[in-house]
Image (cartoon, rainbow, N blue to C red; front, side, top):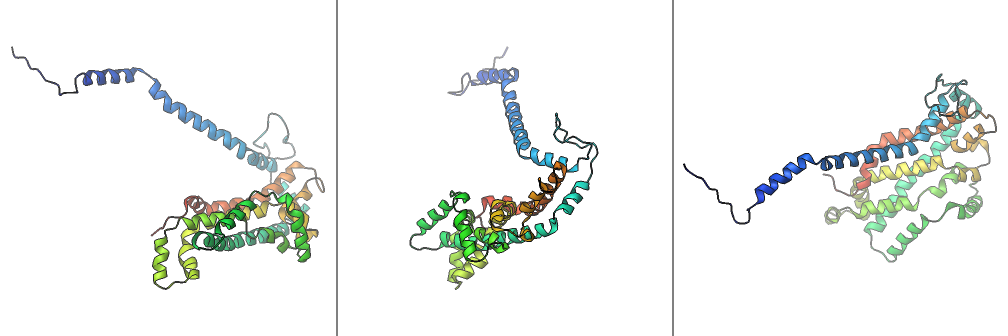
Length: 307
């Protein structure tokens, strides 16, 4: 009878039995398997809660705009799906107020604000990120300060300025105060700051001037930030209600957000018509976002050189 003895290496004595016992314990203990499931469930519950808070009011307005006269608007429990959907409330809203004219006014103001913020914000952001000059840090601090100053504290002085320039009751007077914002400048500054300097230095050796380096090298490299600034500026100008209400007095110059208020109490008390007018004001924003969403999400991490 032959006996075979396998000698364990130094330091490995007892490792195999311990590993085997740990494997058997893991096979019988359900806790390691439950932890990923609990974490996944918690994430989905959080996502559902956020969606209910953010998307819920929009879905309720959309449902209200499609409800017929026999459907309950404020009933409990809420009726999300209309029993008799109809589009007649959109026609009533268009007949009550000149939606096309107000929408065109809003489009002019919002598009002008988006273009001016992209152009002027890019110029200022490039200067703060790439150029060396005295008090550059102070300039950055001033732009930061403009972001925390409430509009209500300066709207009287802005109105007096527009009146002195004879721009009150004009669409230019509505768009001029938001032609460039501190947020746009700082977003561009952050994007330009993270661009590698080697690319511009190579262009400088080739004889490119400051304007050529900005227009042909730096600006094309931050297309994502341009989309972000354009969307933010357009949405802010389109949704703005208080400033157009202060500046404009002629109903022919009203923006859509101001004109839609005619649906609330002045000409009608039907919540279905008011909801239809609200949805008509939201549709252009959805079209803009979904058309630029690829560039929008890319702009979050702007700054890398793509070759």
